[in-house]
Length: 343
Length: 248
Image 1 (tube, chains in turn green, red):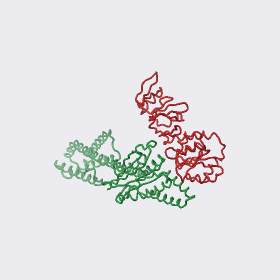
Image 2: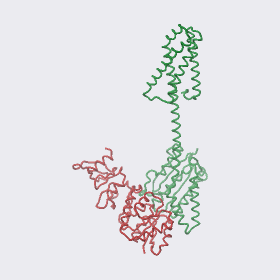
Image 3: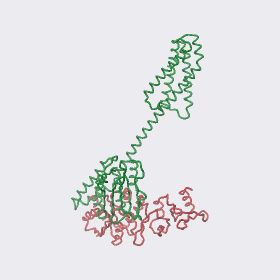
Image 4: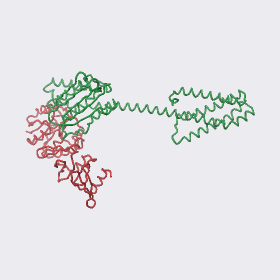
Protein backbone atom coordinates (compact mmCIF):
# COMPACT_ATOMS: atom_id res chain seq x y z
CA UNK A 1 0.00 0.00 0.00
CA UNK A 2 2.99 2.26 0.52
CA UNK A 3 3.44 2.21 -3.23
CA UNK A 4 -0.08 3.47 -3.67
CA UNK A 5 0.40 6.51 -1.58
CA UNK A 6 3.36 7.92 -3.52
CA UNK A 7 2.86 10.68 -6.06
CA UNK A 8 2.40 9.88 -9.73
CA UNK A 9 5.60 11.67 -10.89
CA UNK A 10 7.64 9.53 -8.50
CA UNK A 11 5.85 6.45 -9.74
CA UNK A 12 6.77 7.25 -13.36
CA UNK A 13 10.40 7.88 -12.31
CA UNK A 14 10.41 4.50 -10.64
CA UNK A 15 9.04 2.86 -13.78
CA UNK A 16 11.76 4.46 -15.96
CA UNK A 17 14.39 3.17 -13.50
CA UNK A 18 12.81 -0.28 -13.73
CA UNK A 19 13.06 -0.08 -17.54
CA UNK A 20 16.77 0.83 -17.39
CA UNK A 21 17.44 -1.96 -14.91
CA UNK A 22 15.57 -4.35 -17.17
CA UNK A 23 17.74 -3.32 -20.16
CA UNK A 24 20.91 -3.80 -18.12
CA UNK A 25 19.71 -7.17 -16.86
CA UNK A 26 18.86 -8.48 -20.31
CA UNK A 27 22.19 -7.23 -21.72
CA UNK A 28 24.09 -8.83 -18.85
CA UNK A 29 22.32 -12.17 -19.26
CA UNK A 30 22.88 -12.19 -23.03
CA UNK A 31 26.55 -11.24 -22.51
CA UNK A 32 26.81 -14.05 -20.01
CA UNK A 33 25.89 -16.52 -22.73
CA UNK A 34 29.10 -15.48 -24.50
CA UNK A 35 27.94 -12.81 -26.94
CA UNK A 36 29.80 -9.58 -27.40
CA UNK A 37 28.54 -6.45 -25.60
CA UNK A 38 27.29 -4.86 -28.84
CA UNK A 39 24.88 -7.74 -29.47
CA UNK A 40 23.93 -8.01 -25.82
CA UNK A 41 23.14 -4.29 -25.56
CA UNK A 42 21.18 -4.24 -28.84
CA UNK A 43 19.09 -7.13 -27.56
CA UNK A 44 18.58 -5.46 -24.18
CA UNK A 45 17.57 -2.10 -25.62
CA UNK A 46 15.24 -3.44 -28.29
CA UNK A 47 13.42 -5.86 -26.03
CA UNK A 48 13.15 -3.25 -23.26
CA UNK A 49 11.76 -0.62 -25.61
CA UNK A 50 9.19 -3.06 -26.90
CA UNK A 51 8.29 -4.09 -23.37
CA UNK A 52 8.08 -0.46 -22.24
CA UNK A 53 5.76 0.34 -25.15
CA UNK A 54 3.54 -2.59 -24.19
CA UNK A 55 3.52 -1.46 -20.55
CA UNK A 56 2.67 2.09 -21.55
CA UNK A 57 -0.17 0.81 -23.70
CA UNK A 58 -1.69 -1.30 -20.98
CA UNK A 59 -1.26 1.45 -18.40
CA UNK A 60 -2.93 4.00 -20.62
CA UNK A 61 -5.68 1.61 -21.42
CA UNK A 62 -6.41 1.04 -17.76
CA UNK A 63 -6.38 4.73 -16.96
CA UNK A 64 -9.55 5.29 -18.97
CA UNK A 65 -11.13 1.93 -18.60
CA UNK A 66 -11.36 0.00 -15.37
CA UNK A 67 -12.30 -3.60 -16.09
CA UNK A 68 -15.41 -4.80 -14.31
CA UNK A 69 -15.41 -7.92 -12.18
CA UNK A 70 -16.23 -10.19 -15.13
CA UNK A 71 -13.77 -8.79 -17.64
CA UNK A 72 -10.46 -9.75 -16.04
CA UNK A 73 -10.21 -12.41 -18.71
CA UNK A 74 -10.06 -9.63 -21.32
CA UNK A 75 -7.16 -8.09 -19.45
CA UNK A 76 -5.40 -11.45 -19.47
CA UNK A 77 -5.90 -11.75 -23.20
CA UNK A 78 -4.52 -8.25 -23.61
CA UNK A 79 -1.40 -9.15 -21.61
CA UNK A 80 -0.90 -12.37 -23.55
CA UNK A 81 -1.21 -10.71 -26.94
CA UNK A 82 1.04 -7.81 -25.95
CA UNK A 83 3.65 -10.30 -24.72
CA UNK A 84 3.30 -12.12 -28.04
CA UNK A 85 3.83 -8.89 -30.01
CA UNK A 86 6.91 -8.02 -27.93
CA UNK A 87 8.42 -11.43 -28.51
CA UNK A 88 7.65 -11.33 -32.20
CA UNK A 89 9.15 -7.83 -32.36
CA UNK A 90 12.40 -9.09 -30.87
CA UNK A 91 12.40 -12.01 -33.26
CA UNK A 92 12.05 -9.77 -36.37
CA UNK A 93 13.78 -6.53 -35.39
CA UNK A 94 17.00 -7.68 -33.71
CA UNK A 95 18.29 -9.70 -36.74
CA UNK A 96 18.33 -6.45 -38.76
CA UNK A 97 20.75 -4.92 -36.26
CA UNK A 98 23.20 -7.71 -35.58
CA UNK A 99 23.77 -10.55 -38.02
CA UNK A 100 25.23 -13.62 -36.41
CA UNK A 101 24.05 -17.19 -36.99
CA UNK A 102 24.92 -18.29 -33.48
CA UNK A 103 22.98 -15.41 -32.10
CA UNK A 104 20.02 -16.14 -34.40
CA UNK A 105 19.96 -19.63 -33.06
CA UNK A 106 20.10 -18.35 -29.48
CA UNK A 107 17.31 -15.88 -30.23
CA UNK A 108 14.88 -18.44 -31.59
CA UNK A 109 15.65 -20.79 -28.73
CA UNK A 110 15.04 -18.08 -26.10
CA UNK A 111 11.70 -16.97 -27.58
CA UNK A 112 9.63 -19.03 -25.14
CA UNK A 113 11.37 -17.64 -22.09
CA UNK A 114 11.20 -14.12 -23.55
CA UNK A 115 7.48 -14.53 -24.08
CA UNK A 116 6.89 -15.58 -20.48
CA UNK A 117 9.09 -12.92 -18.89
CA UNK A 118 7.38 -10.30 -21.06
CA UNK A 119 4.00 -11.66 -20.09
CA UNK A 120 4.92 -11.51 -16.40
CA UNK A 121 6.24 -7.97 -16.70
CA UNK A 122 3.18 -6.74 -18.57
CA UNK A 123 0.87 -8.54 -16.15
CA UNK A 124 2.67 -6.91 -13.25
CA UNK A 125 2.33 -3.52 -14.91
CA UNK A 126 -1.38 -4.13 -15.51
CA UNK A 127 -1.88 -5.02 -11.88
CA UNK A 128 -0.02 -1.97 -10.59
CA UNK A 129 -1.97 0.33 -12.93
CA UNK A 130 -5.25 -1.17 -11.95
CA UNK A 131 -4.57 -0.75 -8.25
CA UNK A 132 -3.23 2.74 -8.81
CA UNK A 133 -6.16 4.00 -10.81
CA UNK A 134 -8.83 2.37 -8.73
CA UNK A 135 -7.18 3.90 -5.68
CA UNK A 136 -7.19 7.25 -7.44
CA UNK A 137 -10.87 6.86 -8.29
CA UNK A 138 -11.67 5.86 -4.76
CA UNK A 139 -9.85 8.89 -3.38
CA UNK A 140 -11.84 11.19 -5.61
CA UNK A 141 -15.17 9.63 -4.71
CA UNK A 142 -14.27 9.90 -1.06
CA UNK A 143 -13.39 13.55 -1.44
CA UNK A 144 -16.61 14.28 -3.27
CA UNK A 145 -18.58 12.44 -0.68
CA UNK A 146 -17.09 14.33 2.22
CA UNK A 147 -17.62 17.61 0.39
CA UNK A 148 -21.23 16.72 -0.27
CA UNK A 149 -21.67 15.78 3.34
CA UNK A 150 -20.23 19.05 4.48
CA UNK A 151 -22.54 20.95 2.15
CA UNK A 152 -25.54 19.00 3.34
CA UNK A 153 -24.60 19.65 6.92
CA UNK A 154 -24.22 23.37 6.33
CA UNK A 155 -27.56 23.48 4.55
CA UNK A 156 -29.18 21.56 7.34
CA UNK A 157 -27.83 23.86 10.00
CA UNK A 158 -28.96 26.80 7.97
CA UNK A 159 -32.45 25.40 7.66
CA UNK A 160 -32.69 24.52 11.28
CA UNK A 161 -31.90 28.08 12.14
CA UNK A 162 -34.22 29.60 9.59
CA UNK A 163 -37.30 28.34 11.29
CA UNK A 164 -38.18 31.73 12.50
CA UNK A 165 -41.90 31.57 12.32
CA UNK A 166 -43.73 33.84 9.92
CA UNK A 167 -46.59 33.57 12.35
CA UNK A 168 -44.54 35.35 14.98
CA UNK A 169 -43.45 38.06 12.57
CA UNK A 170 -46.91 38.86 11.24
CA UNK A 171 -48.51 38.85 14.66
CA UNK A 172 -45.82 41.17 15.96
CA UNK A 173 -46.45 43.54 13.07
CA UNK A 174 -50.13 43.39 13.88
CA UNK A 175 -49.42 44.34 17.50
CA UNK A 176 -47.33 47.27 16.32
CA UNK A 177 -50.20 48.27 14.09
CA UNK A 178 -52.45 48.34 17.14
CA UNK A 179 -49.97 50.29 19.27
CA UNK A 180 -49.36 52.97 16.67
CA UNK A 181 -52.90 54.25 17.17
CA UNK A 182 -52.84 55.00 20.86
CA UNK A 183 -49.35 54.25 22.24
CA UNK A 184 -46.95 55.43 19.56
CA UNK A 185 -43.96 55.32 21.91
CA UNK A 186 -44.53 51.67 22.68
CA UNK A 187 -45.02 50.96 19.02
CA UNK A 188 -41.68 52.55 18.31
CA UNK A 189 -40.04 50.56 21.08
CA UNK A 190 -41.47 47.35 19.74
CA UNK A 191 -40.22 48.10 16.24
CA UNK A 192 -36.74 48.50 17.69
CA UNK A 193 -37.01 45.29 19.64
CA UNK A 194 -38.23 43.44 16.61
CA UNK A 195 -35.50 44.77 14.36
CA UNK A 196 -32.81 44.06 16.96
CA UNK A 197 -34.12 40.55 17.26
CA UNK A 198 -34.26 39.97 13.52
CA UNK A 199 -30.81 41.46 13.01
CA UNK A 200 -29.48 39.18 15.72
CA UNK A 201 -30.96 36.13 14.02
CA UNK A 202 -29.49 37.04 10.66
CA UNK A 203 -26.06 37.90 11.94
CA UNK A 204 -25.34 34.81 13.93
CA UNK A 205 -22.96 32.20 12.69
CA UNK A 206 -24.14 28.71 13.45
CA UNK A 207 -20.75 27.24 13.99
CA UNK A 208 -19.91 29.81 16.58
CA UNK A 209 -20.03 29.17 20.28
CA UNK A 210 -21.32 32.17 22.19
CA UNK A 211 -21.50 32.90 25.93
CA UNK A 212 -24.86 32.10 27.53
CA UNK A 213 -25.18 35.75 28.53
CA UNK A 214 -25.21 36.89 24.90
CA UNK A 215 -27.69 34.23 23.98
CA UNK A 216 -29.96 35.21 26.86
CA UNK A 217 -29.78 38.85 25.86
CA UNK A 218 -30.99 37.95 22.40
CA UNK A 219 -33.64 35.69 23.84
CA UNK A 220 -34.86 38.53 26.01
CA UNK A 221 -35.63 40.58 22.93
CA UNK A 222 -37.82 37.75 21.72
CA UNK A 223 -39.49 37.34 25.11
CA UNK A 224 -40.15 41.06 25.39
CA UNK A 225 -41.94 41.00 22.06
CA UNK A 226 -44.00 38.01 23.10
CA UNK A 227 -44.86 39.83 26.30
CA UNK A 228 -46.23 42.76 24.36
CA UNK A 229 -48.46 40.31 22.54
CA UNK A 230 -49.43 38.15 25.50
CA UNK A 231 -48.45 40.40 28.39
CA UNK A 232 -51.56 39.54 30.32
CA UNK A 233 -50.74 35.84 30.33
CA UNK A 234 -47.00 35.44 29.94
CA UNK A 235 -44.39 35.56 32.68
CA UNK A 236 -40.77 34.61 32.35
CA UNK A 237 -38.15 33.67 34.93
CA UNK A 238 -34.53 33.59 33.94
CA UNK A 239 -31.85 32.53 36.38
CA UNK A 240 -28.22 32.29 35.53
CA UNK A 241 -25.29 33.24 37.75
CA UNK A 242 -22.15 35.03 36.65
CA UNK A 243 -20.19 31.82 36.30
CA UNK A 244 -22.67 30.04 34.04
CA UNK A 245 -23.30 33.19 32.02
CA UNK A 246 -19.82 32.68 30.68
CA UNK A 247 -20.53 29.11 29.63
CA UNK A 248 -20.44 28.63 25.86
CA UNK A 249 -23.19 27.23 23.69
CA UNK A 250 -23.91 27.09 19.95
CA UNK A 251 -25.66 30.30 18.96
CA UNK A 252 -29.43 30.25 18.48
CA UNK A 253 -29.72 26.88 20.17
CA UNK A 254 -32.03 28.06 22.92
CA UNK A 255 -34.36 29.95 20.61
CA UNK A 256 -36.38 26.97 19.30
CA UNK A 257 -36.59 25.48 22.79
CA UNK A 258 -38.05 28.66 24.22
CA UNK A 259 -40.31 29.09 21.20
CA UNK A 260 -41.57 25.60 21.81
CA UNK A 261 -42.15 26.34 25.50
CA UNK A 262 -44.09 29.47 24.69
CA UNK A 263 -46.11 27.76 22.00
CA UNK A 264 -47.20 24.89 24.19
CA UNK A 265 -47.57 27.11 27.21
CA UNK A 266 -49.72 29.71 25.53
CA UNK A 267 -51.61 27.62 23.05
CA UNK A 268 -52.46 24.70 25.25
CA UNK A 269 -53.65 26.48 28.33
CA UNK A 270 -55.87 29.48 28.85
CA UNK A 271 -54.44 30.48 32.21
CA UNK A 272 -51.39 32.52 33.08
CA UNK A 273 -48.19 30.92 31.93
CA UNK A 274 -44.72 31.06 33.45
CA UNK A 275 -41.81 30.00 31.27
CA UNK A 276 -38.62 29.52 33.23
CA UNK A 277 -35.08 29.24 31.96
CA UNK A 278 -32.33 28.13 34.33
CA UNK A 279 -28.64 27.77 33.59
CA UNK A 280 -26.05 25.91 35.65
CA UNK A 281 -22.53 24.65 35.29
CA UNK A 282 -22.36 20.97 36.19
CA UNK A 283 -18.89 19.52 36.03
CA UNK A 284 -17.72 20.06 32.50
CA UNK A 285 -21.18 20.79 31.12
CA UNK A 286 -23.33 23.85 30.78
CA UNK A 287 -26.82 22.62 31.70
CA UNK A 288 -29.85 24.64 30.68
CA UNK A 289 -33.36 23.77 31.78
CA UNK A 290 -36.46 25.26 30.20
CA UNK A 291 -39.86 24.65 31.77
CA UNK A 292 -43.36 25.48 30.70
CA UNK A 293 -46.82 24.40 31.78
CA UNK A 294 -48.89 22.36 29.37
CA UNK A 295 -52.15 20.52 29.36
CA UNK A 296 -51.75 16.77 28.94
CA UNK A 297 -55.40 16.56 27.94
CA UNK A 298 -55.15 18.69 24.85
CA UNK A 299 -51.56 18.92 23.87
CA UNK A 300 -49.57 16.56 21.85
CA UNK A 301 -45.90 16.94 22.63
CA UNK A 302 -45.34 13.51 21.10
CA UNK A 303 -41.86 13.01 22.46
CA UNK A 304 -40.41 16.08 20.85
CA UNK A 305 -41.83 18.58 18.43
CA UNK A 306 -40.08 19.52 15.25
CA UNK A 307 -38.27 22.43 16.80
CA UNK A 308 -36.83 20.21 19.50
CA UNK A 309 -35.84 17.54 16.99
CA UNK A 310 -33.89 20.24 15.22
CA UNK A 311 -32.07 21.11 18.44
CA UNK A 312 -31.19 17.49 19.02
CA UNK A 313 -29.93 17.14 15.46
CA UNK A 314 -27.78 20.24 15.83
CA UNK A 315 -26.27 18.99 19.06
CA UNK A 316 -25.53 15.72 17.34
CA UNK A 317 -23.90 17.40 14.35
CA UNK A 318 -21.79 19.59 16.56
CA UNK A 319 -20.81 17.19 19.32
CA UNK A 320 -21.52 13.76 17.79
CA UNK A 321 -23.58 12.82 20.85
CA UNK A 322 -27.22 11.91 21.09
CA UNK A 323 -27.63 12.22 24.83
CA UNK A 324 -27.36 15.97 25.19
CA UNK A 325 -31.07 16.73 25.21
CA UNK A 326 -33.85 15.25 27.28
CA UNK A 327 -37.47 16.11 27.92
CA UNK A 328 -39.74 15.25 30.83
CA UNK A 329 -43.43 15.69 31.33
CA UNK A 330 -45.02 15.58 34.71
CA UNK A 331 -47.51 17.51 36.84
CA UNK A 332 -48.54 19.53 33.80
CA UNK A 333 -45.00 20.83 33.47
CA UNK A 334 -42.95 20.17 30.38
CA UNK A 335 -39.20 20.30 30.95
CA UNK A 336 -36.47 20.42 28.35
CA UNK A 337 -32.88 19.95 29.52
CA UNK A 338 -29.86 20.43 27.31
CA UNK A 339 -26.22 19.86 28.17
CA UNK A 340 -23.44 21.56 26.30
CA UNK A 341 -19.97 20.12 26.84
CA UNK A 342 -17.48 22.89 27.64
CA UNK A 343 -14.35 22.23 25.65
CA UNK B 1 -77.99 47.61 14.20
CA UNK B 2 -75.95 44.44 13.96
CA UNK B 3 -74.37 42.78 16.96
CA UNK B 4 -70.81 41.54 16.85
CA UNK B 5 -68.14 39.73 18.88
CA UNK B 6 -64.36 39.98 18.62
CA UNK B 7 -62.64 36.71 19.45
CA UNK B 8 -58.83 36.78 19.57
CA UNK B 9 -56.31 35.75 22.19
CA UNK B 10 -54.13 38.84 21.71
CA UNK B 11 -55.53 42.00 23.33
CA UNK B 12 -53.72 44.24 20.87
CA UNK B 13 -55.17 42.37 17.94
CA UNK B 14 -58.66 42.88 19.35
CA UNK B 15 -57.87 46.52 19.83
CA UNK B 16 -57.14 46.97 16.14
CA UNK B 17 -60.50 45.50 15.22
CA UNK B 18 -62.31 47.66 17.79
CA UNK B 19 -60.51 50.76 16.60
CA UNK B 20 -61.33 50.10 12.95
CA UNK B 21 -64.92 49.33 13.91
CA UNK B 22 -65.36 52.86 15.26
CA UNK B 23 -66.11 53.90 11.69
CA UNK B 24 -69.15 51.62 11.71
CA UNK B 25 -70.41 52.41 15.19
CA UNK B 26 -73.84 53.29 13.88
CA UNK B 27 -74.27 49.95 12.21
CA UNK B 28 -72.32 47.48 14.32
CA UNK B 29 -72.28 47.14 18.07
CA UNK B 30 -69.62 45.02 19.73
CA UNK B 31 -71.24 43.04 22.52
CA UNK B 32 -68.08 41.56 23.98
CA UNK B 33 -64.41 40.81 23.45
CA UNK B 34 -63.40 37.19 23.99
CA UNK B 35 -59.98 35.91 24.95
CA UNK B 36 -60.32 32.38 23.63
CA UNK B 37 -62.65 29.89 22.01
CA UNK B 38 -64.37 28.95 25.25
CA UNK B 39 -65.29 32.50 26.06
CA UNK B 40 -66.30 32.85 22.44
CA UNK B 41 -68.70 29.92 22.63
CA UNK B 42 -70.28 31.27 25.78
CA UNK B 43 -70.69 34.72 24.33
CA UNK B 44 -72.12 33.40 21.07
CA UNK B 45 -74.62 31.41 23.05
CA UNK B 46 -75.49 34.42 25.16
CA UNK B 47 -75.72 37.14 22.51
CA UNK B 48 -76.51 35.22 19.31
CA UNK B 49 -74.45 37.82 17.40
CA UNK B 50 -74.90 38.57 13.71
CA UNK B 51 -71.19 38.79 13.02
CA UNK B 52 -68.00 37.56 14.65
CA UNK B 53 -64.39 38.52 14.05
CA UNK B 54 -62.54 35.30 14.70
CA UNK B 55 -58.85 34.57 15.07
CA UNK B 56 -57.78 31.12 13.92
CA UNK B 57 -54.89 30.29 16.22
CA UNK B 58 -56.05 30.40 19.82
CA UNK B 59 -55.30 28.37 22.91
CA UNK B 60 -56.85 24.91 23.40
CA UNK B 61 -59.40 25.09 20.64
CA UNK B 62 -58.75 27.05 17.49
CA UNK B 63 -61.24 29.21 15.64
CA UNK B 64 -62.40 26.44 13.35
CA UNK B 65 -62.92 23.99 16.16
CA UNK B 66 -64.92 26.59 17.99
CA UNK B 67 -67.12 27.20 14.95
CA UNK B 68 -67.81 23.48 14.62
CA UNK B 69 -69.49 23.63 17.99
CA UNK B 70 -71.76 26.56 17.23
CA UNK B 71 -75.29 25.67 16.23
CA UNK B 72 -76.67 28.84 14.64
CA UNK B 73 -73.60 30.07 12.95
CA UNK B 74 -73.23 33.83 12.66
CA UNK B 75 -71.43 35.45 9.74
CA UNK B 76 -67.72 35.19 10.23
CA UNK B 77 -64.81 37.39 9.23
CA UNK B 78 -61.63 35.49 9.97
CA UNK B 79 -58.47 37.22 11.10
CA UNK B 80 -55.24 35.31 10.96
CA UNK B 81 -51.54 35.98 10.63
CA UNK B 82 -50.26 33.00 8.78
CA UNK B 83 -51.75 29.61 8.19
CA UNK B 84 -51.41 28.12 4.74
CA UNK B 85 -54.21 25.60 5.21
CA UNK B 86 -56.62 28.17 6.47
CA UNK B 87 -55.83 30.61 3.69
CA UNK B 88 -56.32 27.92 1.09
CA UNK B 89 -59.67 27.11 2.64
CA UNK B 90 -60.68 30.78 2.76
CA UNK B 91 -59.83 31.28 -0.87
CA UNK B 92 -61.84 28.29 -1.95
CA UNK B 93 -64.87 29.21 0.14
CA UNK B 94 -65.62 32.87 -0.23
CA UNK B 95 -66.00 33.73 3.43
CA UNK B 96 -64.11 36.94 4.01
CA UNK B 97 -60.84 36.90 5.85
CA UNK B 98 -58.24 39.43 6.95
CA UNK B 99 -54.54 38.72 7.02
CA UNK B 100 -52.80 40.37 9.93
CA UNK B 101 -51.63 43.05 9.85
CA UNK B 102 -54.48 44.39 7.74
CA UNK B 103 -55.11 47.97 6.66
CA UNK B 104 -58.13 50.01 7.53
CA UNK B 105 -59.19 50.00 3.89
CA UNK B 106 -59.07 46.25 3.69
CA UNK B 107 -61.01 46.01 6.93
CA UNK B 108 -63.64 48.45 5.72
CA UNK B 109 -64.08 46.45 2.54
CA UNK B 110 -64.69 43.28 4.50
CA UNK B 111 -67.24 44.92 6.76
CA UNK B 112 -68.98 46.71 3.90
CA UNK B 113 -69.20 43.46 2.04
CA UNK B 114 -70.83 41.91 5.06
CA UNK B 115 -73.24 44.82 5.52
CA UNK B 116 -74.18 44.83 1.85
CA UNK B 117 -75.05 41.20 1.63
CA UNK B 118 -78.64 40.17 1.98
CA UNK B 119 -78.93 38.06 5.10
CA UNK B 120 -78.88 34.72 3.39
CA UNK B 121 -79.06 31.22 4.78
CA UNK B 122 -76.34 30.49 2.25
CA UNK B 123 -73.76 31.70 4.71
CA UNK B 124 -74.24 28.67 6.93
CA UNK B 125 -73.59 26.29 4.12
CA UNK B 126 -70.51 28.24 3.14
CA UNK B 127 -69.12 28.01 6.63
CA UNK B 128 -69.80 24.31 6.70
CA UNK B 129 -67.93 23.81 3.47
CA UNK B 130 -65.10 25.88 4.83
CA UNK B 131 -64.88 23.75 7.93
CA UNK B 132 -64.80 20.62 5.79
CA UNK B 133 -61.94 22.09 3.78
CA UNK B 134 -60.01 23.18 6.84
CA UNK B 135 -60.29 19.74 8.34
CA UNK B 136 -57.62 18.69 5.86
CA UNK B 137 -55.00 20.60 7.82
CA UNK B 138 -52.76 18.42 9.99
CA UNK B 139 -53.63 20.19 13.24
CA UNK B 140 -57.19 18.98 12.90
CA UNK B 141 -56.19 15.34 12.72
CA UNK B 142 -54.93 15.05 16.23
CA UNK B 143 -57.99 15.78 18.26
CA UNK B 144 -61.74 15.82 18.03
CA UNK B 145 -63.61 18.62 19.72
CA UNK B 146 -67.13 17.82 20.91
CA UNK B 147 -69.72 19.49 23.05
CA UNK B 148 -71.45 17.70 25.90
CA UNK B 149 -74.24 19.88 27.21
CA UNK B 150 -72.58 23.22 27.71
CA UNK B 151 -69.10 21.79 28.17
CA UNK B 152 -66.48 21.47 25.50
CA UNK B 153 -64.55 18.24 25.44
CA UNK B 154 -61.29 17.80 23.56
CA UNK B 155 -60.59 14.20 22.69
CA UNK B 156 -57.04 13.38 21.57
CA UNK B 157 -57.30 11.03 18.61
CA UNK B 158 -55.12 8.56 20.48
CA UNK B 159 -57.90 8.12 23.07
CA UNK B 160 -60.47 7.08 20.50
CA UNK B 161 -61.40 3.38 20.61
CA UNK B 162 -63.92 3.28 17.81
CA UNK B 163 -66.50 5.34 15.93
CA UNK B 164 -70.04 4.36 15.19
CA UNK B 165 -72.42 5.97 12.70
CA UNK B 166 -75.55 7.25 14.38
CA UNK B 167 -78.06 8.80 11.95
CA UNK B 168 -76.60 12.17 10.97
CA UNK B 169 -74.00 11.96 13.73
CA UNK B 170 -71.04 9.84 14.64
CA UNK B 171 -70.55 8.48 18.15
CA UNK B 172 -66.96 8.72 19.29
CA UNK B 173 -66.19 6.00 21.85
CA UNK B 174 -63.40 6.52 24.39
CA UNK B 175 -62.49 4.99 27.76
CA UNK B 176 -64.57 7.63 29.46
CA UNK B 177 -67.68 7.20 27.39
CA UNK B 178 -69.11 8.17 24.04
CA UNK B 179 -69.62 11.58 22.49
CA UNK B 180 -71.77 12.66 19.59
CA UNK B 181 -70.17 14.64 16.80
CA UNK B 182 -72.15 16.14 13.93
CA UNK B 183 -69.96 14.76 11.19
CA UNK B 184 -70.25 11.86 8.79
CA UNK B 185 -68.35 8.58 8.75
CA UNK B 186 -66.85 9.63 5.42
CA UNK B 187 -65.47 12.75 7.04
CA UNK B 188 -63.62 10.73 9.64
CA UNK B 189 -62.46 8.22 7.08
CA UNK B 190 -60.84 11.09 5.20
CA UNK B 191 -59.31 12.91 8.13
CA UNK B 192 -58.16 10.20 10.53
CA UNK B 193 -54.81 8.58 9.84
CA UNK B 194 -55.51 5.46 7.81
CA UNK B 195 -52.57 3.70 9.41
CA UNK B 196 -54.33 3.74 12.75
CA UNK B 197 -58.01 3.77 11.91
CA UNK B 198 -59.80 1.39 9.58
CA UNK B 199 -63.35 1.62 8.35
CA UNK B 200 -64.23 -2.00 8.99
CA UNK B 201 -67.91 -1.61 8.29
CA UNK B 202 -70.27 0.90 6.73
CA UNK B 203 -71.12 2.14 10.21
CA UNK B 204 -67.90 1.45 12.11
CA UNK B 205 -64.36 2.67 12.24
CA UNK B 206 -61.86 1.09 14.62
CA UNK B 207 -58.49 2.07 16.10
CA UNK B 208 -56.49 -0.98 15.08
CA UNK B 209 -54.37 -0.85 18.22
CA UNK B 210 -57.51 -1.62 20.20
CA UNK B 211 -58.21 -4.89 18.42
CA UNK B 212 -57.30 -8.02 20.35
CA UNK B 213 -58.94 -10.66 18.16
CA UNK B 214 -60.84 -11.11 14.96
CA UNK B 215 -63.35 -13.96 15.01
CA UNK B 216 -65.28 -15.35 12.07
CA UNK B 217 -68.95 -14.55 12.44
CA UNK B 218 -71.63 -15.25 9.91
CA UNK B 219 -71.00 -16.03 6.28
CA UNK B 220 -68.49 -13.54 4.84
CA UNK B 221 -68.36 -11.41 7.97
CA UNK B 222 -66.20 -11.22 11.07
CA UNK B 223 -66.29 -9.73 14.54
CA UNK B 224 -63.44 -7.62 15.90
CA UNK B 225 -63.07 -8.01 19.67
CA UNK B 226 -61.57 -4.89 21.25
CA UNK B 227 -59.56 -4.49 24.43
CA UNK B 228 -62.57 -2.80 26.01
CA UNK B 229 -64.63 -5.91 25.28
CA UNK B 230 -66.69 -4.25 22.58
CA UNK B 231 -67.56 -6.42 19.59
CA UNK B 232 -67.46 -4.61 16.26
CA UNK B 233 -68.91 -6.13 13.08
CA UNK B 234 -66.44 -6.39 10.22
CA UNK B 235 -67.82 -6.54 6.70
CA UNK B 236 -66.26 -8.47 3.85
CA UNK B 237 -64.56 -5.41 2.36
CA UNK B 238 -63.71 -4.18 5.85
CA UNK B 239 -61.92 -7.45 6.51
CA UNK B 240 -59.86 -7.05 3.35
CA UNK B 241 -58.87 -3.50 4.40
CA UNK B 242 -58.04 -4.67 7.89
CA UNK B 243 -55.83 -7.44 6.59
CA UNK B 244 -54.03 -4.93 4.39
CA UNK B 245 -53.31 -2.53 7.23
CA UNK B 246 -52.24 -5.30 9.59
CA UNK B 247 -50.10 -6.82 6.86
CA UNK B 248 -51.58 -10.32 7.02
